[in-house]
Length: 235
Image (cartoon, rainbow, N blue to C red; front, side, top):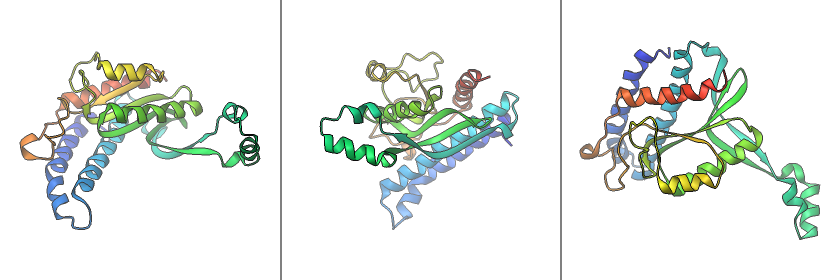
């Protein structure tokens, strides 16, 4: 079912038919705003590709598909006790302590990858990412690591707007000066996987015929190689 040789051409076909057809769908959907339909369609596409590529990678490594689970889950991030203890307002401190079980943040990560019932990868999926969005991704993953300290973090994006060489096929990417600077403040080893080549341009949307970008097998194969490197940590 997740044979790499069979699945890669299928993913490319799905990408082409979905992206080429999304504008027509948006124009015909009278109940929803044009931009909302475009964003939702691309977002769902990227999520599906991430899930499929994880499972393709796992089976291509010769592993039993029944050992892996890729799912969505809201993770309860509890309030930090040192924050409560350091509160200057005694009435607030007393109230929070009395109702401590109510104080948590429901963190939603696009995909959690579990092997043998152990969460090992957290994946955030984006149609594209720019550095302001990256900060939110890093906050989420930093909180996730408070619950699962050894979990690997992945940003899986269709296009990149982070600058540098994230939108290239280079295996050893240097990234960009701004992105590396932001990463340095969070202590997160973020694996950034980009499917399409070239920097995203706001005025050149890929769902427009004249700006359409091809998704090729090399890009998907590179994504699989990156997931393999992550899985090898847990072997």
